[in-house]
Amino acid sequence: MSDATLPKPTAPALQKKRGRILGNPGLVVAALVLGLITLMAVFAPLIAPHDPYVQVLDDRLIPPAFVDAEMSDPRYLLGTDNLGRDYLSRLIYGARISLLIGLLTVLVSGVIGTTLGVAAGYFGGRVDTVVSFLITTRLSLPVVMVALAVVAVAGGSLRVVVLVLGLLLWDRFAVVMRSATMQLRNLEYVAAARSVGCSTPRILLGEILPNLVSALVVVASYEMAQAILLEAALSFLGLGVQPPLPSWGLMVAEAKEVMLFDPWVILLPGLAICILVLAINMLGDGIRDATAPEGRS
Amino acid sequence: MSGEARPILELRNVVKRYSVGRGLFARKRALMAVGGVSLAVQRRQVLGLVGESGCGKSTLAKMVLGLEVPTEGEVLIDGRPIASLGRLERARLVQPVFQDPYSSLNPRKTVASIVGLPLSVHGEGSAAERQGRVEEMLRLVGLAPRHAAAYPSQLSGGQRQRVAIARALILKPQLLICDEPTSALDVSVQAQILNLLMDLQSRLGLTCLFISHNLAVVQMLATRVAVMYLGRVVEEGPTAEVMVHAQHPYSRGLLASVLTPDPSLGLPETGLGSVFPDPLDPPPGCAFHPRCPLAFDRCGVEAPLLLAHRGNARAACHAAERQAMAAA
View 1 (cartoon, helix red, strand yellow):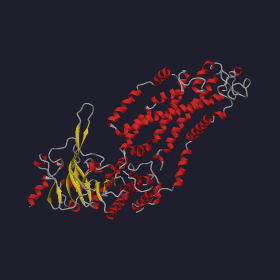
View 2: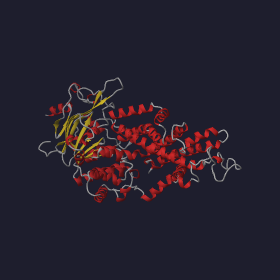
View 3: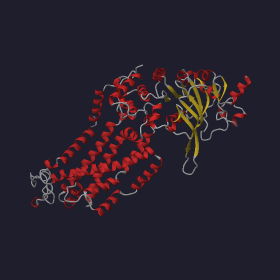
View 4: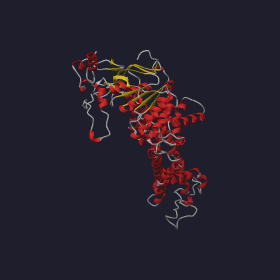
């Protein structure tokens, strides 16, 4: 009475998992880039060569060495902006704002969206009708317009931006979690958990949620990228984070006055946003591929 | 069925209707999934429930597990109506083994936590005691202790079904509901799982409701057999009697439908045709009469009752009744 195939011991299984992570170059590169940006953000005061707020009006718009070697100044590795602030330091501090906004927004919207979506998918019926109505209502609101209106009334600050984006970006969480939960609800292990006597919260937390994690990671990464972009857009329009905070979006906005003569001023923060968003999306996709249980054999 | 002890499971005229929508403007219609089933399973018995797909077998199982509430009638477990039991109490009495071991185990959990879940839900013992009982249970169902750390995706279908059986038995339930526990497995593995179930049944003295559409499997395991057609029990009795002298023409058709491994024999001739009636619009009288080779005028008018015509088996068939009367 013994089956022919037995599972491999744990060590090779772990090795295989490591192989799946390292065998995905996109995931590795994204993780490295994101790790670097996070370290930069956390240790900004230690890394930044200058105070990002100090204006040296004599040193305005000094180009970095790779733009103009003659005009460049070794004290300012990436040059200075049009108020004479060190650009590298501002970029480093800007990472703090982008990551903070991204993480907090995803936290707020993820909690709202996942709760609504899982409830709708698991209970169905009236709950589902109400949640679906909320989702449709939310989807009919143009995010940027509402965000602009609210920020214009409430005033732009980091807290307001996080709250507005968090309360607006939960729809994708809700839609994805709802349909994923509906599929899981009918699986036999949920019926088995109910037969065993599990309470509803225990089924939701113990059986449903762990199986939503890979979908959750992907949506969260997408929404984080989205929130960072929206913050940049709002700040660019002057309605997000207020100067002199070094938000990358705000830096793009400030640089647009001089972009005809000094395009690198607008290029650097734009590039920073682009790299960060790309890394987050690639990381999300990579984690999903590496953790999906279907491929874990 | 007289003078016996209180049955572990008793169904009293259980009915389950589903309301089926047919689009936005059409009226909803009632689908009778189970139409008045009365059955009893005695302690240490195995009742085999057979019938083709869609006849209400699984709905019946869900009602016994408390996952569905009957529209009418009562499900009694150990003499107590299931509606009056709390979820923990119910779980101690009845446990299921489902059909598909690929969807009945949470892919994110290890075998140990799947098998140990019932114990932790019921707050039994310390963590160490629970671990001990899980290991003991795994040994009982023929798994090695090292399987405890494995995830379901690292196991074969047969091993997964062993895990599902271990989970069902760890609370020592009074009644085990097996809903086609072998039909998703390879034929060679089916035999292993059936041997395991038979072994456990005799060792632990399990009472079992065994649902299957495989008659050979039922013959091997069951002490009694109930044949279902379109939500009703059409024949019920001791396995040997039903298998050898089936009274209902549908049971005979089912017995004739057993596939043979020799492909040159082709599909067996059951004499039933292949049309399953629309459960939304069941035929009047005996639901089986449009397919029945023995049908006569009374069958299209009056629904037959489940009565004993011969021996210890009961059948719901006018033709069987007429035959029995002619013989008497």
